[in-house]
Length: 143
Image (cartoon, rainbow, N blue to C red):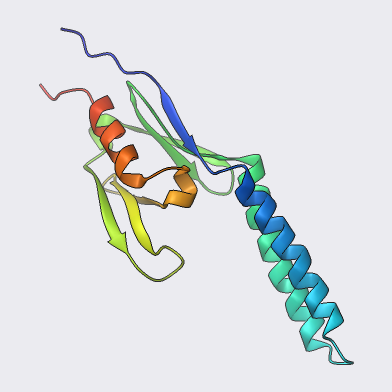
C-alpha cells in the first residue's frame, strides 16, 4: 500500500502580529509620555518598540512556521527564509514542556541532528501535541 501524505502547514495567528504592533505603539507612547525630561525613558521605549515592530513584521512577512509533505518538514531559517528537512534528516519529533526564555509550556521539538527546532503554540496556532501527531502520521514508514 502506498503511503500518501497531504501537505499541511502551521502558522502564527493573524492576531499575534497586530498585538505586537499595538504593544510597540503603547511602549513608544509610554516612553514619550513618562519622559519628564529624562532621555533614558523615551530611548528605552524606542528600543523596545523597534524590537516588537521587527518581531511583528516577521510574523506578517513569514507567518508559516512549519510545513510538512511527503518529502519532509520545512522549518524557518533566518528572518524569512525556509529550510527543508528531508525525513531522513529528522531524528525525533516530540513535545517537551519548557520554561523560561519566553517559551513556557509545551513546545514541539524537531531534532534534525545538526539543528534543533522549537515551536510554541503561538508559533503553530494550535496545540504542539496535535502537530506532533500530524507529523508522525505524515512520516513515511521506514523500510
